[in-house]
Image (cartoon, rainbow, N blue to C red; front, top):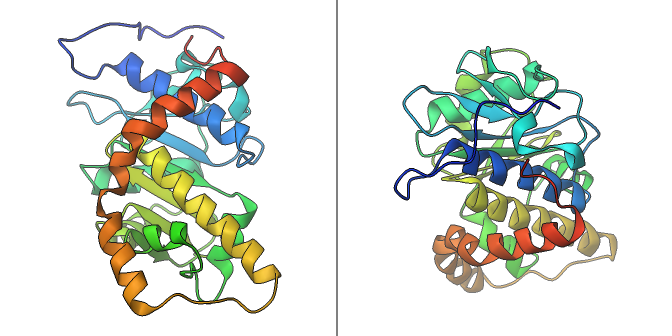
Length: 253
């Protein structure tokens, strides 16, 4: 793969494009490490620092465990390739979903979308995510829903998707999968981990028979305690990077 012109640099403590590239490549590999990938499908994206309204997304055709910082493709808000990475092409459905959030939410520095089976299963459940675990209760106040409209190729869907997301950080795309949005890659991946773990627990709990519901007071209390959930990334992300460095290094080239 040919390295892009985006080189490691510093900017008086400000986030650089290379830093974002490295974090996003790490997130792709972590998704693969946790078994949440779907061959070459689904997408994680991140906003490129600066005023140009560019963002980074995976080249269509690479498996998630193959992604590197330099292989990521830079596109504009219309999905046109600005700077090619490894393969130089992107999935148009991925562009539709991610551009909707990046264009509609200035605070969305990163967006992550998966088709992992447990997430899809809960998205297809009539009642969606239930308060069956502490993890789920930490997610509920951050969660929204969007009804399935078909493979996301219709640009008109962007308006409805961002309307349904509102100011939330997590979304269940009905009959489709999960989505998270946050200020940066570490925060967005942390939201993703909590949402996926909540879905995994729900699928297992419901397979065991009748479930036990917590009290309404416990649900409300946990919702109040969840307001700083994104801040957990300050602890989780460095630990996740250490895990990745021990299992699948090489993403930062």
